[in-house]
Length: 461
Ligand code: ZN
Image 1 (tube, protein in one colour):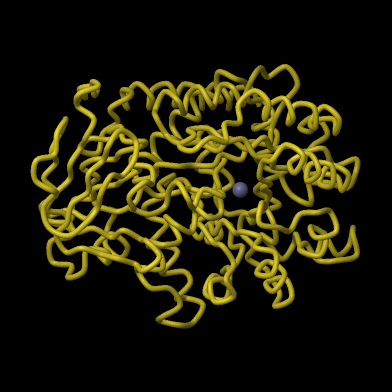
Image 2 (cartoon, rainbow, N blue to C red; image 1 turned 90 degrees about the horizontal axis):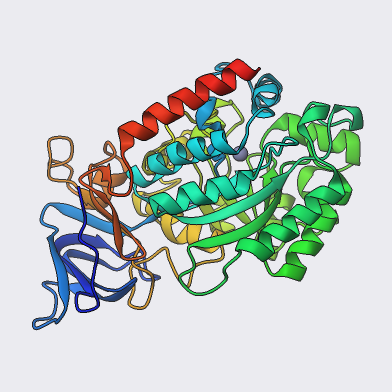
């Protein structure tokens, strides 16, 4: 569906008659409220209809039968894996990685562009308005992989944190990746700094952040971890990695470094408010206290943890201790659905499986996916809740249809029910989804392009 661009006189979008979960600090909700968007920010939110006499209204959306939430924030992903889904179906992390590294090491910029279109489209279609993509495979001669993914994301209109990832510890140095899949330490640091200089936009409302993201303790050198943390702090960007994902990883760290993953990260400058780590399934009480003390964030990836039998992260304990926690899809080679919206349900269910019916409530799950993610990405003043002055990243879920009309609580309809249809998704005040479809690209074209790219990549192995 074509969307009329806003001209200078038509700067407002009004949404009325919707149930609204603002996810502000007080958890304010309206049974039937309104939001006024002015350009790319929220001008007002409140109970009942929008104020009368608003000028320059480009569009009025009737939210009857809908729940309006902040756009969802994805804190961990690997977009390139869109081309390698459904493989190594019954492996745990290390065997799964060893099975897939040789294929991944043949990615190039054209395939990266296609994979990003697929991954980003799936995220948008499940209510995600901001996503972080952790890309760490940079084969020699593969072209500008980060540039290709940024271009594809910009085409679809998603707010983006591109993570310049890296691997420099291969098998010959006791690591897990094959020797041909890693880069040289100095090259990584130079490319990381260049990526920050070229792309990182720290301004309010930025559509593009860069962060530095060496892959994991078993695929990067101690030197790279230390130098990356120093470089990130010098450049004022955030740090991300995988941490404490499996028992095998903890064992690897104890063997090689004589300490567990969290103590190892601490020794390389990797705990702090500017750091977030994916998974953190195997945190001891002492690890958890260190995360809380330093404000280190966690990207909780429930489906991926289940798919790889990694274990159940201690999310209720993390929240009780004040650790910042967001949700992540993780790469689609370990979470083929690729949807962020369904992770709200899976986070709640999986954390309850650890033993307590109140381990996570529906509202806590929604908060993880919105404000939690915003805090983890260092953007809590811009996104994650519906409040005047914050960016207009909004998801309007239809909850009066067959699958949802009998669920008593609108937030429960979103979190416990099937993922509702998405009537409208605004990113930066621009509608990028209308009635479940992208406004910015042809989905069947993306599907065909991705299928071709996946066959191409498989044939290279
Ligand atoms: Zn991951």
